[in-house]
Image 1 (spheres, rainbow, N blue to C red):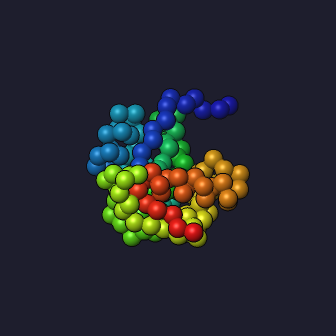
Image 2 (cartoon, rainbow, N blue to C red):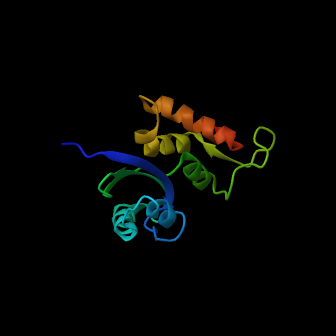
Image 3 (tube, rainbow, N blue to C red):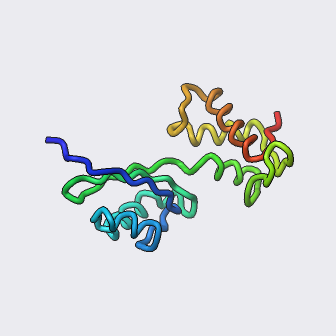
Length: 141
């Protein structure tokens, strides 16, 4: 028999660095989930993404058990990393903060492919280029 789902929790936590402090503790505590159990499981699963922001969707069941799905870091994180910037442009569309090459955009698209709504790498690259433009980062090539 399938477990009864009571809700979903969406969080963005740095990979390998989950702890009971906010935002993790309060979000899980109000649903009655064992916070330390989640933190240990999450940190173990995200060792390879240490320090990068990792979106996670936690499924909470009626018996206070949980499952979670780890997604890839946001495209904006990869784009800022490729352009070697702290943040995008303060005025996207007017001021260009930096630039990335089409090859870098393609590499980001390959890394994000499982989370993007695209069938092939060409379409995924277009999505990444659009994200870069909206951050005020030029795509060359």
